[in-house]
Length: 397
Image (cartoon, rainbow, N blue to C red; front, side):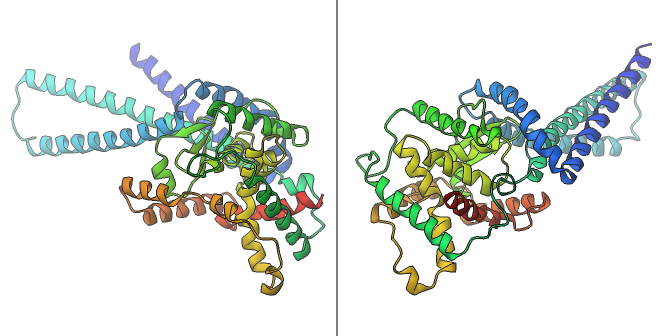
């Protein structure tokens, strides 16, 4: 009777896994072929995950995603050790197979063997469910969103092309505003731009800045959890990452080592991901406009600094030297503030490094490049710089 029940439970378990896998795969395939579906999903279904999983992980002050990643690495090492021990025992048992056993010994051996089989079956089920959860959250909260309509398609005139004149106008606006704001923001004893308030007040300012965009961009409206500081920010700095979005916990995380003025634009960038904006250039854009349209000068300054590098590089490529010399220049303070890490911060990072920064950065870039191209972003990491087009269109309108 028990054996029959076990078989039924096993069949039901396997069917559930198969149905969920096929359903997720079907949704994934549909997203590649229907922008209408993906846009509907982002507006009506995706907020459910932010409102449930995001609220749940938001109950914890630490980044749940970071804890889960560390736990996953530990579990992988444990699995490898258990497998090594199991294989080792099997080899020893094979070698001693010819040894005669008594009746009691045989019974004990069979009992132990059944125990091992049950354990490995249970272990396999746990692994399958963990993998299915990862596949499900990555699909629903990340992969399918790569195929949603772009900001340009929905809110700008894509027929209208921009040229050097529009590029220079946007660049001039950004640099001029950054120069002005560099004199207005609060600074600490070291001369670093800092927020005039607590960390919690900064979080609230970022939430208000993002929610204010919900009037024009409906998917940005609604609930925002607190962003999470990453404990392993020194390692994160080696990857040149300012922030990171965890789809499996619906958390916006940021680097605590980086130069402070990067935080607002980074938090708003990661908040964009929590609203279904998965393209990096678009998240850069929303980080930019939410900050510069806020009431706080510190957020505004962070927003302008977040795109000044992209615009400067494009101006250098597109504008002849003679004409470029006549353009407005970033002042000395802006140049000092427009950094990922200061020299002292880099020294701290290198001091704590276990693996060289070059190796870590190359591995990260390879992963990001592969992840983007597999999701249909043909220009990979270079797509980040598409924010220039969006900034130009923003100022043009």
